[in-house]
Image (cartoon, rainbow, N blue to C red):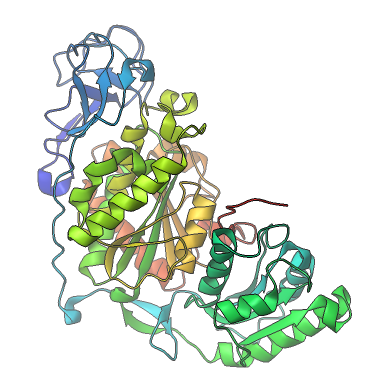
Length: 520
């Protein structure tokens, strides 16, 4: 089997998929083993014979690589060889080095060509009074601190499928439980992050109404929270303080009554045809492997280009990984101001992590090497490909409201639960996640579409994963064809079709505001 895709079908120049190995770019000096390779094997379509067994997903030198030479994957530098690497050898992370002098500016992004309004894709969404569009119609039960967690969960749990049957347009009542809010600084960045995340989630279009519970003596004082975030009581927004209403049992009873009063208004919203310009997609990755760079990530990038072309929004995060690209990421910015915001955000992250035991300061963890990733720069480039090819139009702090269309960047860690929570607080009404090893994640508030890099993983975790990108690796589909399949799936799930994580009930424990700061 030998398949060659054109540049238009792939983000790489000269992608070649053969029986045993994949060449991402014609200028690469490495190959990716497509299957387990045993001993000395002549690789189809190449002029190299392997010197040892190579596991699927791992890298093999396509030719002799000299010490000090750049190691190139997908046409991009992923590291510098610290010693000679013989052709046909498995490339290990001990054979790389990265430092601040390792530079390889990325290609300038392609400006998106927006489709005319009458040619844009559509989905069935809920239109709010202010014009925002939701993909789900939820009522939410929030807490300012963990002390009210049980009461909030019991309020939400009371609204079973049977009890909500009379309200067919309401997709559910969700508890938003977290572990912080007490024992933390009362002012400063940690408290601001928590409050901004909560208020942003309450204001997400997928929320039709919200109840906030408090014990009453939290550091995240409920009245301070309401004042800082400019929230006030309304028919679709209520609060309860356990210490004021007579304790947990009374709060649960009154909380149930408060949500019941919101149900009739929430049920008045029904799905209607809306433009795909109302999609706001947070993009994530979990358990990346060597195949993600071939299939899942560039395919998601192709789908995100379609979202942007249709006037929608794509939110890229993972500062902890992308900081490894440093100055090289500036070329993806739409203008000089965005480039400078990117530089400052990435530099702040690098400074914050100096001297800490984080992956930004290491090559990469051993388990990642076994799955085909050798350097943090390689992982960052793989992650960046999820965002597609268009320019970054804006840079936003964690959980800040995203006010720009197109591809934007939000400062957030690589931990998907924390990162997606911030994206949803910023306005994302859907999440897309790529994985090589598998993921059980699902956001509470935004339907989460998960795609596997290989058919093997997709079949093994069929109840958790929505899409199989393995056909790209097998040469059956081009990246662009798979991107269209992902985009079509997005429209279906935005219109109400349940994702795997929704079918499994995943999400109630995945609301994780960024827990910065000192606990005391």
